[in-house]
Amino acid sequence: MTRKRVGVLVSGRGSNLQALLDACAAPDFPAEIVLVVSNIPGVQGLTRAYKAGVPTATVNHRDYPSREAFEAALDATLRAAGVDIVCLAGFMRVLTAGFVEAWAGRLINVHPSLLPAFKGLHTHERALAAGVRFHGCSVHFVKADVDAGPVIVQGVVPVRPDDSAEALATRVLAVEHKIYPHALRLVAEGRARALDDRVELAHVPSRDGVLINPPLE
Ligand code: GRF
Image (cartoon, rainbow, N blue to C red; front, side):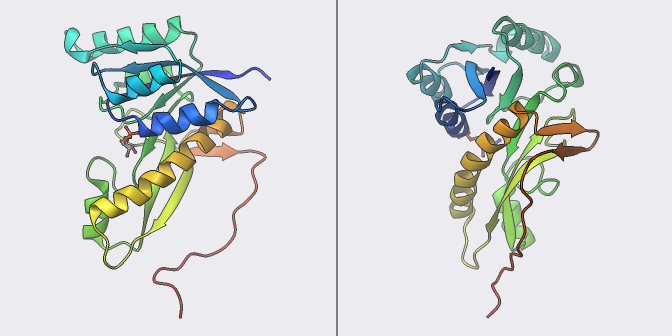
């Protein structure tokens, strides 16, 4: 098995990066993280990579005159490391169509909502305000629009009657850490492929069962 070479882009805490590092530590995992890049110097994500023995780079967007120049540097850094797949993990820069198209089908992101609901920021607050009974997270192929793109894997979290945004965020984050390595595995093995606006899955079991919240009595 040739493992796919993964570059992870971070801007902060890096807990999803940690989940990916942990998954890739298993010798039978189909991908390895060869580079972690941050656009912000000194963030916790870089420390996590260093501790895992993974090379790091900082490409500070403030050092570049334009978004395109920043992305050209990012692209060159990833290519120099021989990256096959790029994972965004709390990467807080919007990417232009040029970058996204250059990495089409090989660029994935984790977002804390059940897309296409609640794109953008403050997803947990907005889910509570909307009164939905289920919330969750998605891993998706990236398209040029923010938080748009075909969904690979989703994880669902029931909303509790007494929930706070913080409590909900904590429960959703724990699910992000499960679904991101799962989605990366599917992409690395070629079992999840972007096909226009949806993802074609091959050789995955189908999921049955119904979730009802509040539960039937
Ligand atoms: C996560 O909630 C992720 O879904 C969102 O940004 C957050 C990053 O957290 N895109 P971390 O840096 O992975 O801990």
